[in-house]
Image 1 (spheres, rainbow, N blue to C red):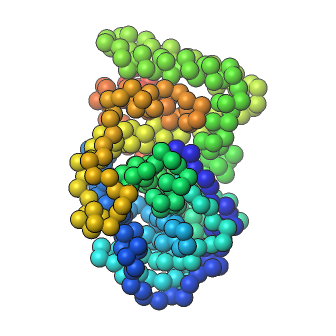
Image 2: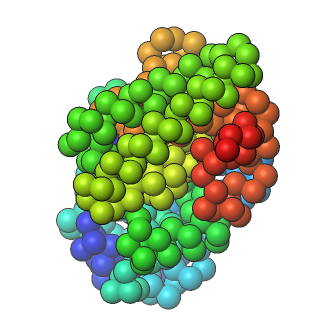
Image 3: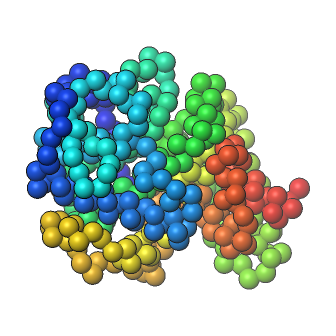
Length: 361
């Protein structure tokens, strides 16, 4: 999903432009915000049941900042946020969460759906310094920006994608690893990797061949054929990465491995969620208040369009998500217990787990 970043000035202004610290009662529109996040909590927990059990152990893995036209709301802010947000209004609610209301910064983005963190020491005053914060626009703002996102359910899937990334980053081993890589200048973000992919035809063409090998391995009917195809994938992949290093003196291997691991599993989570989201019963209050919640809505995950969305490369989507997703398909096809140490072994990539499984030398 295309996203717009919140500028650094916006993060600073969240600290500078705050309302008085009071306890306030929610308006009817604000009650809808609470109902929506109760629905998000239910969807998240259901997703934990059908895909990744540890995703269900907390109501929310970190601070969520929700934007409407004229205000921002901190949903479930972490305690340390009090050190950076000195004044705010505490909003009473029916769900026993902590919710703060803040005035909207003047230069805020009209649409955002992103989990972000800062690592530069100059950013110590920012609310997302070394901690993942999920910034999201309301469904109404999102609908203005994304014509294809017309329902609360579609908005919820996009938010769950980012919430899952927040869950990943909230693991100490993952955050420690990625921060170290940035400090050692061995890491680039997914946008930068995608830029390399788009700007280099040979790089892009080779990745198409690599992804085709992964898909063929998923479809293979014999273990030996599957192993042979994955070995070919590894050789082609290594050749591409080496060629890029010789040209630029930068190894894409480390960031590629890391982002495939996080984005690939996130897309698999999203795939499972789309299959099941219609089974999640929303709060009764949501059905009464939310005009964008569409009863009877469901995704057709068996459609060709949905299948292609996940396993085919597309210049408009991160390539690491596609290759990562197809490697996760291979892991799941063979019942490899890849989830057991996925978060704690932050540097262990998907391709290496498969290499160990196939016993490829």
